[in-house]
Image (tube, rainbow, N blue to C red; front, side):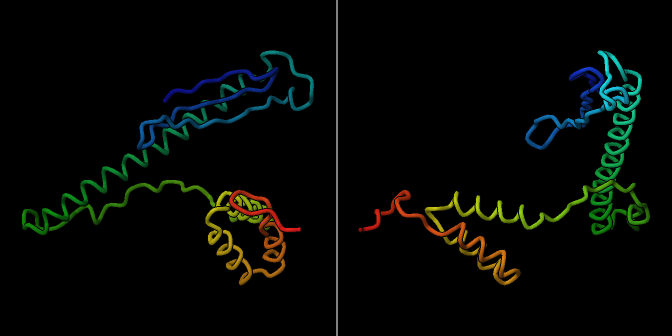
Length: 173
């Protein structure tokens, strides 16, 4: 596994580690920003924190290697388990020994729910992007009404149709 370290500004380093490829072929890179103690205090010179950044890069490379290794083992285990399962069905083997082996755990990503302000932005953006098909925005507002009447009321005001929008006639007056 390779890693790259580049100094963004004195004492601040960008660390990047190649972690494989996605299904569509694009590379996966893990990026981190490392700030040296000197830069944190506002007294950094070019090159400060090089050794500490090297250590942090080595830790990141080791972590990616460990995660990739566990993922590879899990994939191979699944492949062998599926092959043995089929062989067991066809009476080619007496039992599937892969059922007795436990592949290493992989570390999943911690998912957090958005807060009220983020939900409001998401819903307003979705409704505005779907002006020509407003049921999406209306559905979101309705769903939120069931959950939180105050939030839904403020979203309803934000999503109210505006006169003079695309495909609308100006109000007679």
